[in-house]
Length: 498
Image (cartoon, rainbow, N blue to C red; front, side, top):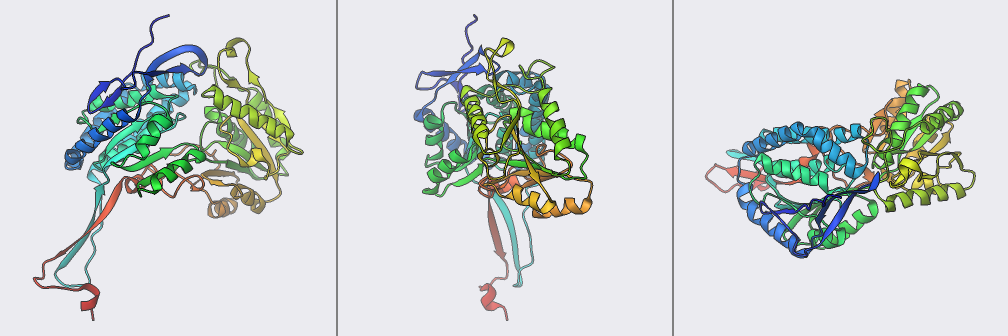
């Protein structure tokens, strides 16, 4: 076997080894015999060095004209576009998602980078007339300083771009810690930024575990913002870690998303939406449709077609063009899926309609594969209908009306994404109004967000912020209001108004 490539951290414009002198393996979840590379198992000293580099670079980067920052981001987007296929193949190999999906992941990073490059000339504030004579007022954005970005493995290039590009265009500097399961895609993104011409220290890249890198990073006194995407449990720990120092904290966490299929829906279209929502990315999306709520008049037809379509899905290595669903990211996540399958089997009245087993023979022998799994006769309060599984498991729930279906959607701890399939415009608008989620679709699945609109959810899905679009600018900047009095005398605002 050829010797595995060793990848380094990127600190202050240099590719360096960790002071720990230790590395960790990055392996292909479709074939764990395939060692992709060795990455630095970094420690607090590495974090300190990265934060110091970012802190020092901030003073010059914040004064760098925003249109010039935009030119760098534009070049980065061009590099990503040129290397899209290479980066997508790397992503499928280390994360497992189907190659078409990996191309989409890279494309989303391209889109976000182009979009935020445009914001180099559009960081608009407000001007408004004063209530006093000879006085001018306006607001402007200020960068925060050093931003810590802690990102997940399921979208290893798209999600980092949602955080990195707005942070950079606003004049912040960054320390980026990727998920330990997908450091190669993060490395590729950082290399593109380096090639695009980012100055030294503006972007720093440190790999390692959450305890050894993430915790020291989020508690570092010089870090002004922590932007985290991951599970709600870890997000809570991030919020607690940052609360005492009043750091800005942007949390994007879990979801228990639902598709509502009404009795007038185009059933075949709804089935395709449920397949894509439930089993795309092996169900490993915060926006995955893990619940399908179906009107009682069509539930039999829908369920029969849904189960047949799920059984026909080709599971395998994402690099195979015939594959429709890849592996779970790691053994731990696969075990979580299997645990919830057993929970579902024991829930009163719930019926396992298809799937439910780990795949271990033949081409599956060395990977983390599980069958697409559907439970029927699920009640809304069951654990498989309430808890995020993050795998290829879907619960089918019956409803007797639009109002009941909306109530079922809303009665979870999460509020990220939902959708309705109906041909009745009135029903669609009622659902758009009454479903309490940050994202809602009509006659489409629960996944498919675009970069120029806000992304995020309600309740335990997040802490009120939104990523992407104009909303991202508010995460990575502070507002400053400026009052310029040229009257030549002291004016006391409301006191002087009669």
